[in-house]
Length: 77
Image (cartoon, rainbow, N blue to C red):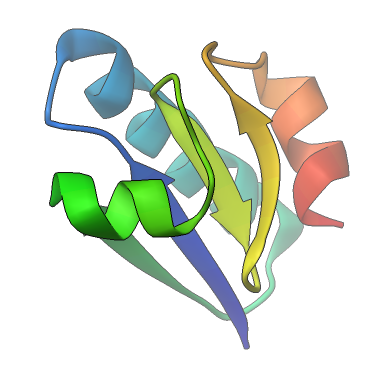
């Protein structure tokens, strides 16, 4: 099962990234768990300086922007 984490304080971009990640994971048909990480200390623990960020199975895949649905599918594959 893929573990997808959205790092961000809950801003509009963070919510958009969560929506895109959810849609991409659903379309790939793989089982996944989606977690929103909003605590600054935990976000900094990933070494991320700009949010939102997408983390897949513990690896930061993108930060500071919201990738397209197609880009996100590739990042999750």
